[in-house]
Each structure stands twice: as C-alpha cells, then as structure tokens.
Image (cartoon, rainbow, N blue to C red; front, top):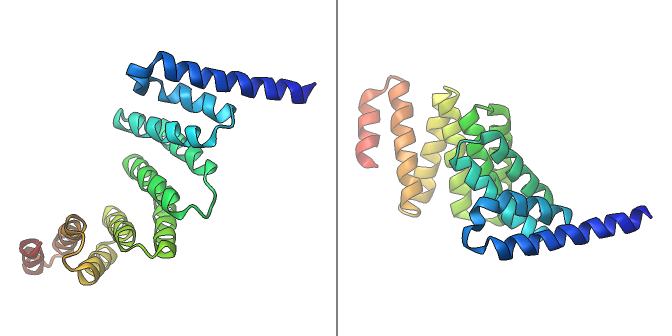
Length: 193
C-alpha cells in the first residue's frame, strides 16, 4: 500500500510540473521554486536540477541568501560526485552566497572543492576562477600576504589569457600590497593591470 501511495504521489508531482510549465509558460520565472519542489518529488532529476539552479539565482538576486544557499545545496545533492564541471559551476554560485553572508567556513570549503574539481578537469579557466576566489577569501579575512600570493600566481600563470580574470588578479594584488603598506608596489601593480 505504501509503495502504491509513493508511486501515486510521484505521478501527481509529475503532473504538477507539466501543468505549471504549461499554465505559466509566459511568466515561468515566478514559479521556479514550485517547479523545483514538484520536480524533486517527481524524481525528475534533470528538471529539478534546472529549476533549483534557476530559483537559486533568482532568490540570490533578491538577497534571499538562506534560500539561495538551500536551492544550490539541493541542486548539488542531485549531481553525482564525478560531474566535476556541473558541480564546479554550482559551487561558484553558492560560494557567492556564503561570501555575502559571511559564512567563511562554508565559503572556504566550497572554494577548496572548486579547486579540486577544476584540477581534475584540467581546465585552466576554472582553475583561475578558483584561485581568484581563494585570493578574495584571503583578502576578506585580512590575510593579505596569502591573497597577494594567490593573485600573483594567477598573473604569472595566465599572462594574457582570460583578461577579465587576470585583471581581477591585478586588482587583488594591488589592493593586498596597499594593505601591506607597500604603496609603490601597489601603484605599479594597479597600473600594470
């Protein structure tokens, strides 16, 4: 009996997803949360992942940080551990939530996971993004020497590749040098970037 009820509930949630998508086709963005809920309950993993991510981004823009972290966490729970690229991209979203709310422990854990995934992917752009986030983390936590080291690592290794990221690295290096009291070097780095 319990198995039949579970199957029936899944079917009803499946129907709810289909109905919501059809009824609210023109204004679906207002219903991402409902769609995510029903897709999860219907065991529609791809749709659940899609709507959880969209709703996470939507509520993040509205400064509903706890909800954003929850949606991104639920999306991550649906992904196999070996989906490095997708996991990296979701962590990139969630790390911004943790940065915003000052949850430094969770922020660092996500950054370290991003570094691991980008390394496994052998993806220079993702490695660079992870290093930039790590440098920002050290800057925010007033560890300016380590922030500078990470930023300089990006500058040395990436050169002219990924100009926007390298520009961020120059800005972090200049700001870190300034905080370390090395004004002349800071000005030089700022002008180079």
